[in-house]
Image (cartoon, rainbow over all chains, first blue to last red):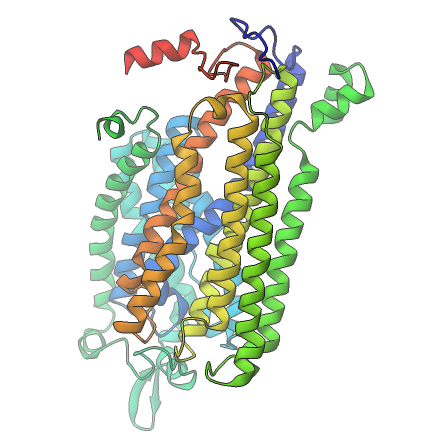
Length: 256
Length: 278
């Protein structure tokens, strides 16, 4: 087939009327919005389950040391990176909330269909946490400050703080003490003993160890405080990684 | 309201149809429905045979119900990959002509629909069946690499999204002038990154065989999966390119790379300026 001549410029666009153009953009927006929902359900969920998943799977893993500390510090990474892309390129300040909603939908689907529907653990043993309050706070600080640095500092603080506060009502009942044959345990511990996970090394493990119990509730607040500071640092680092994802020139790659 | 705008903007019924559907939603719905039906069928098969005949890899019934299922899956995947990729390659235009804006926009719409179905398949693999794998391995002692959850996750849903991702890439490379003229690095990352999860499966099995038999989902063995999950962000870069492409096609106000008869890309003044600045 003979090649057609290449004109110097495109003679005309697909549409000429503003209404047509707006309609074309609108359809693109709707499809991309649905696409992003599935994309972030996949990306954020797989990142979440392989970095802090064990603490999210079971109530007895939701302790006052590692769950409170590790979950917000690690999980802020992806919303921070997405925040840069959404805000810098599209002026959309809701990446934190979007990812949190995607995550909670994806995790609930799994806990109902698989953890409960397939492995037959009761739902009140495998319920997932929610990061929606943290996501709203992250977005709100960006809108109010319009600064990535301030968003990282204050948004990171609120991300970790609200993670604990927002999920405490869900977890509180499972932290109640109970006497089992003369041994002090939490309700969550008892669940872990009754529903044995034979594939793990933790199936006969008390997550909350002695020092955590003897200090009462204080370790949780210490963990939250540390998580707040570290979340701020991780947030800013991953905002910069989000920036790297929006690069289009890749001159460094050409040099390599 | 949208209908009113379309009716006012378009003179004929065919124009109205084309205007409202430059992204073929039928492709999205049918493609996503096929993916969902495959995933749900796999999930039902697991519900029926995982706990009954999937606990002991040395049992004869495991061979019957799971290993033969795995081999059948390999055959179907090979046929699907050959058929879909082969069709896209064999029906390509070897020299992409200069296209009318509407035709190019239609192709961009098909491309967008293919990416949607690809992402939907990634969701089933990376979210739904991945965490299901956790529920299995934290309950059942690992006695083989080919467990009922692994067979579905690694060897069926992973290949499914890889086939769809590569198909979308092939479509862009062979039908869309801009992507035919040069490689889109974000798009390569978004396809090749999730593809790399499959080689990581090999590392995962090796590590589980020699190092950590019991399951802890946050173990370092699994961190390569996390690393390559981040490559899905490459779709953000592709989205930026698609926005620019869409603007050009809809308004005709920007002239960008075009595959020509001689194979040489035509560079528009805006991109030339961008290069100079960089």
